[in-house]
Image (cartoon, rainbow, N blue to C red; front, top):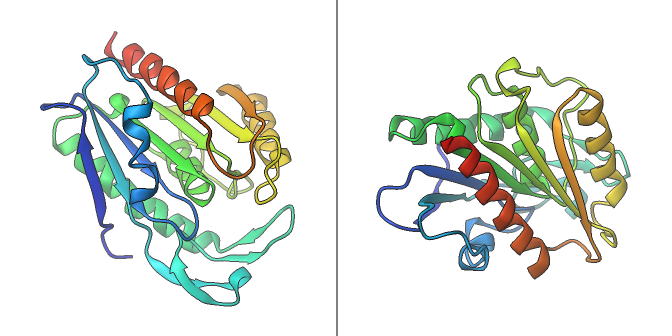
Length: 223
């Protein structure tokens, strides 16, 4: 996979932390760009936001239509069958962005991976297999697609994980968020699970909660 194109926004000069945020199927890096001011992050917490654009590819469940996608979805059932090879290729591409942030002076423990829907599945794979300790994983309206055969990294056994899901989600049913929560808790991961009365989207109360969690997670990294 070619290097990912992305949008970069810094809340102030000389950031000390980074959030790499992956969009969902058919969207692009601009999707979550408007969220930044709504997070209400404290002014002294200087963050670089990276919003990558997924490559374009045919998506089987959409009749082979070419659109931005992190991987192909082959079947739209409750245990949806996905192209795990493509998913991991996307995780590899995002890993390059993580490494770039480290090369630019940001400690790996000050880097948070976030993802919505498809982007969340990629974030799960990368964060939980990555060989250096990260600052956190934010999983929004998503599912742990590679749970059965991922190689969990010891470096991120203490990774703070925040899962958020809409209770009325018709695209990625909330049971899939619960399934990831239960699996990770069963492996002694530090997971917080929150639900909202929404469909397959994000709400203002959820965004405010994300801001609180990001602040807490990055403040902890500074200690």
